[in-house]
Figure 1: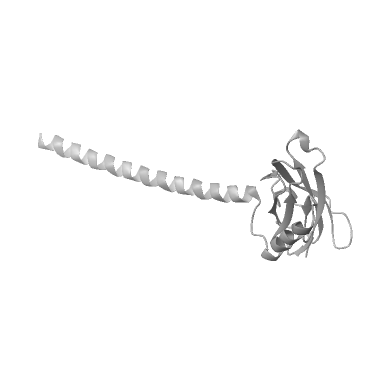
Figure 2 (figure 1 turned 180 degrees about the horizontal axis):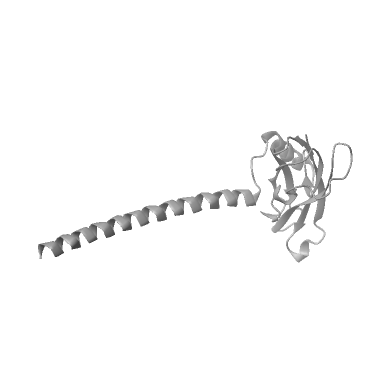
Length: 185
């Protein structure tokens, strides 16, 4: 009888060890999923660090202007593999609360000699193609960052369009397209 009791204790000890290992693995997997979720969530949103001088310039601009969108700078020089966040100001001039969408699209590129770059490598991985949604109260504005990461970029000039639209049907006149130019050196 003693032998059977010892085997049961050994079996119970082994089972407890497995349970502890499984719990530790589950906690580590949970932490990894949380880290990935946080990274993707902030990247998808597109609101990354915006230069404080650009933000201040947009704030000052909207004190004097009623235009729908404003870029303090729409051109930037960047090294291949570098990242830049363009600041855009959006103002709700509709007289009611509305949701606006900001869409960044690729519009073409040319190398330093002026020849067209056909299908640049990984161009659609440089930015998030999902629109950024901004919920704005009437007559309010917001500064949003549009990040472009020039992964494995060939030297040249890359053009992007920023399309700002309103989500509601009653916002049809609200449609604005601006160009961004990225010089990769």
